[in-house]
Length: 188
Image (cartoon, rainbow, N blue to C red):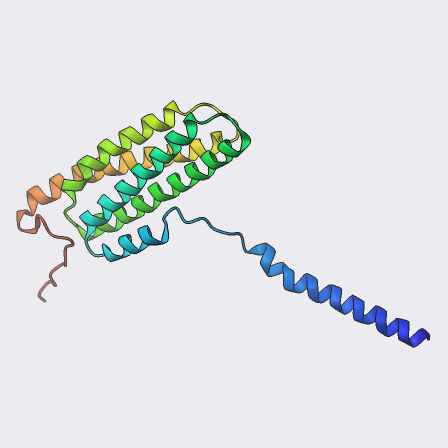
């Protein structure tokens, strides 16, 4: 009878170790939130090579997020509402950071997006006002601070890009209106 219990104990120990090993990757995989819906992500992807369209889409989606946050802020103060606001603010900040990354690419490519930068700058000011007007709740203060930092970064980036683009296209009038600049090879 004794060998049977040893075998059973060994089997149970092996099952326990196997369950720990198989569950470790699941704990390490944190679900990541995507600030865009599947349809929005598809629209952004379709606008991929058209910088002005892509910036307009991001601005539109950020406006939608801002409206959602404003509506949530008007609801009764509950832990569920505060959690939703915190999640919405995190998505809002992520989306602004994503737009900032796109602007970096367009700046490097010398894409002429001056027409969409002014409306974007105006929208950023609205978003900053919305963030400032939110009630102070410890539940989402960190998320609001992150969103406010992202909006400040995006505002500074947009302002700088407007100045840089005005200067660049003043000097390179032949490239105005282009979606990206393909440098011409220098002859040897």
